[in-house]
Image 1 (cartoon, rainbow, N blue to C red):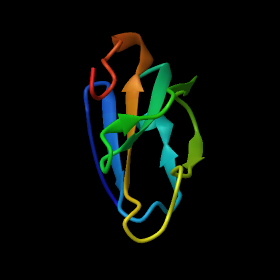
Image 2 (cartoon, one colour):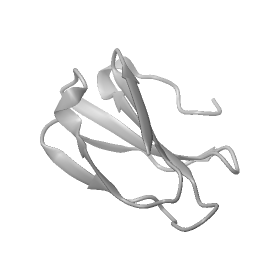
Image 3 (cartoon, rainbow, N blue to C red):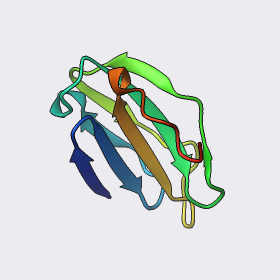
Length: 85
């Protein structure tokens, strides 16, 4: 897995769809919007809003060879556009 973060966002690349635990308090936000993005189709899932505290396990919608995903974690207060908008 590979991840990057900036002011109010983080991208986590899941190359095989395996789950991972992520520390949500590493983003400087009170609430986070989490979205799964499928790089194979260019489509995004339904956003989920959550508190930015503790550790949370994220499991991609599918797993296995050739089933990569990108988890987008945004500061919900920044109202970033979803991928493809």
